[in-house]
Amino acid sequence: MPECFSIPSDEVENRIDPHFYRPAFIQFYQQLEKTQFELKTIGEIAEKVTSGATPLSHGDAYTSKEEGIPFIRSGDINEDKNINFDEVLYIKENTHNKLLKGSKLKKGDVLIAIVGATIGQVSIYDYDKEANINQAIALVRLKQEINPEYIKAFMISTLGQKQLDRIKRPVARANINLDEIRGIKIILPSLTIQNKIVALMDNAYKEQKNKENKIAEFLDSINDYVLDELGIKLPELKDKMIYAISFDRLQNKRADAYYYQPKFEEVERAVREGKFEVKELKEYITKIHYGASVKNEYIDEGIPLLRIMNLKPNKFDLRDVVKLPETMKKELGNAFVKEGDLLISRSGTVGVVSVVPKEAEGFAFGSFMIEFCLNEKVNKNYISAWLNTKLQKLLTERDKIGAIQGNITIETIENFKIPLPPLAVQNKIAEEVIKQMQKAEQLQKESKEELRKVKMEVEKIILG
Image (cartoon, rainbow, N blue to C red; front, side, top):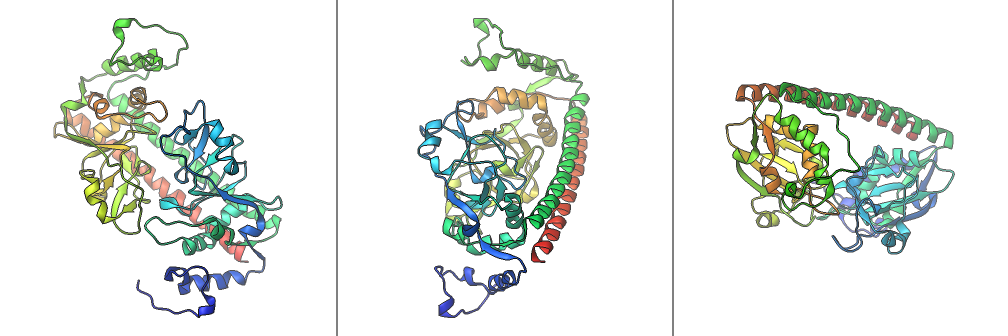
């Protein structure tokens, strides 16, 4: 909405962008000043405020999960403190201890995303293990008498988010500097009240976790339902420490031992012994291509870009879709999705698949995904359901190539083996999967609404 306002010259700070001085922000800060509790800045209550750095992409600083230190980026943090260490990058110990020694994490550190699409996300590092961060995260290490969980609760409320919204620069890639983080105002009640608020939030997160467990049960039931309809009996799968294969069984020039784990043979045998004939997916693919590798120049309005975080098993999450400048359209080439096509993750958590919904028609997609289109001989939602089963995901994981962050290729996808029942059976399976996904989505909405209400209650306590 267009706005017109003026401010006295003596109220101009070190910012000259109009967004910073919008009347709504000024009124909000006046409200903060009326608190009955102490009002301090993060700089006053923290013993350390810093950020990390990002070594050259794919450079010598990085290594494998087994040998490295977790290197956490802004997209890896979330407010419920769960970091997926399978998704993060890993840096060498020497890089962690020397180049990035100032941004080593400790349990209880408050982490705030200060660059890009996830700006404003707040979390607590809740782990004992060594880890580090990149330059898109601010590390806030608090003084002993302050509960970090309270600071997180404050920062994820509108009281913290409005301040972050004010100080972030509304440019192509939004950002906040560390001095601005130090200047954020925190309403600081007694430790007793801080702990009461933390307990409220903990209970809310526990309830959310219970809902998530129910959602997981729905998703597991989808897996079991699909396998049962196909007559596939899930074998007991175990990794073996010692096994041998003959030289003539080496395939595709793969020489890594994991690829030939006996459990994969058991999975393939179970699929072949199901009720229906097994076909290669390439028989039904009419088009397939990689996504675009482009710079992260995100803006408020422009071309919507799908990333791996938007792709979920059998569905899309379109809440945090970033935008690219229209000037990048040529650079994106043919990396635009169409309704009814399928998108699959090829890096990180590989093999996550969903059919593109109408709402995502025409969105661009990144290089860590592959789009493919199927002919009318198969039900697209059935293919998605099969590719997301635990058995197929296990086989997809086996096919990853690359040492640091494995990925799958177009050839991998084309060679997927698909149990193919008659179209009527495919339709039946697809309809049931969609129905179960809708139930899971409803539970998710309920969970978010309950958490929102608790956050509002917390704000009332903070404001007195």
